[in-house]
Length: 427
Picture (cartoon, rainbow, N blue to C red):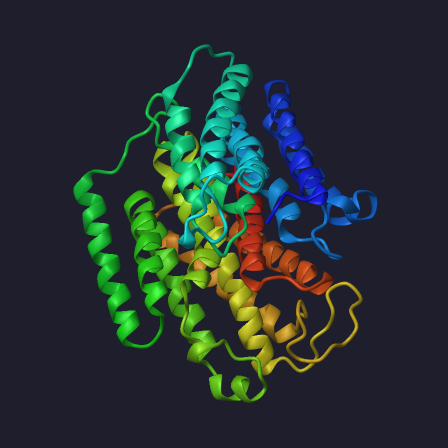
């Protein structure tokens, strides 16, 4: 498909926003975070009315909301090293932007398995992403020199961008950029887990995944995705983080199976008999996995611990709110108008579902106390953050037709961000 004027305008704006990464040299982390939040609100409420050329259809698409949320995540993850946040932003703005522009105007070759993506886009991402990340890192951090690490990470991200994924690139690219930059020894201090630790984590998660698959709880794709996510969480986050993942899986799956026949007759039950696929695993667990991956390298681990717990607690709160609310909720209401709506309406909330979600998040947030992972007051922070993330998802869901997995990712990202901010202030 050739590059259209609308798409060129959209990607030009996408790349122009990357220039704001230069401001990270002058802003405090709090100021930068508030700017990202303001950008999210602008894209949600103002952009659709002032710059309709950036819309792919009549409605606001998820990419325009995921972009500022991704930047907010980078700022929070690298709040003590804004140069790395700027570098990761460079991959998102210029690497991803040039991949689309070049891929559609000069594709060179399109592999059949790449979902329409091309060799031209791959090369453009690697070159533009590596160059912009290196330049932004040097400018914001007052560094000098040509750092091969940024080009190696750019090449890895180009491969990732080439893969056809069910999740928007504005989420995928910052996620992997933050994770890969954290693993570059010259850029960020910290210790990699030992090889035997990762092997043990992989073996444990493979065993759990096989049992879950045999029990009909997950699909074959989720078996693979679950092993990857579980290995990252256990290998880098340790047993407390992994217990949060397992707790989420057990409680969420139980809620999905509860009254499944009734929900099925109502047309509200999860597909494939309630079995979870790779899309569910990525949407609900990628935020917690990303924060777990960064935990050994982060100078303030308590902040990430709260974020990890909140990511899984938000996913559980949302699942319980939906599953229990659809089964037991008698008077679901629209989150903005507060008017009663039919059961199963997208974004609707009910008293029964909300209480179930809050209870589930409190239970899950209490699990790390067994390990002494964080203080008791963190439980309340995590529960409030989980409630916030779930409410954001309900509001967004009620505003239009959204992909459910995108909404699930956004709510976990919001919940984790709220918990990280609160932990930085209160813990």
